[in-house]
Length: 261
Image 1 (tube, rainbow, N blue to C red):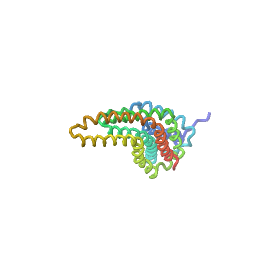
Image 2 (tube, helix red, strand yellow):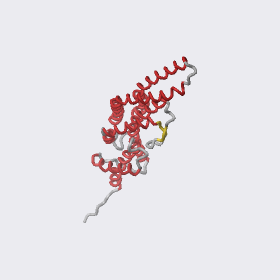
Image 3 (cartoon, rainbow, N blue to C red):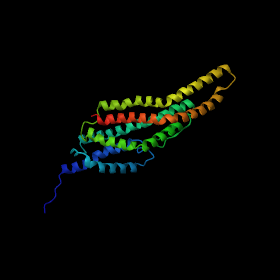
Image 4 (cartoon, one colour):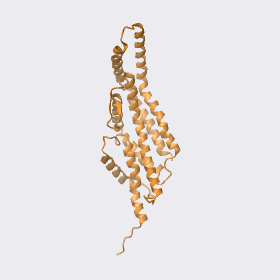
């Protein structure tokens, strides 16, 4: 009987075929919204990463034979983790558009002090930010947005193959440019309510000049708060088309990042 001999190169290639994609997939799952939230246990994310890699490996090209303890292997680990984190971070920026919109509206309505701890990110955000984030998350899951993003992550292995060039300066510039888009997209949601509350505040300013004995802060705060909630209720009718437009722009940036070598 012929003895089966496995060389070191074959063993490294077999292990690397699973380890290198696992680094990118696990970094993506730890950075992406919903799955990467603190409320999701790390054990669940690790199991999802393992199942995703097991399904993904048969359609990937052979992995390069690189020692894990070499300098080249160390750089490849950093490269794979950076690609996964970049994809997850881009989607985090898209979802935080609605968090920032809620923050703007809360500050304008006088609810900036009404903050609570966000269990997903571990930071304090306003109540309205939690409200908009909850709506956007449910809409994202209802239209299978998580499957679209997962498909883009799989497509990244064609644009950024294991052992390839990886992210360049143009990709990092695209990611940094999403910062300005974050504020502009949040203003699109809040601008109608901003304009309405500005008129209300100007009206109270005129009233304070015509009747100086009236305490504007005592009268104006509850009225501004009540009108703010009424205006939010009216603007929710237009939230769905604005949401889809913002998601298309954000996913478009992510798709450009994935398809541009």
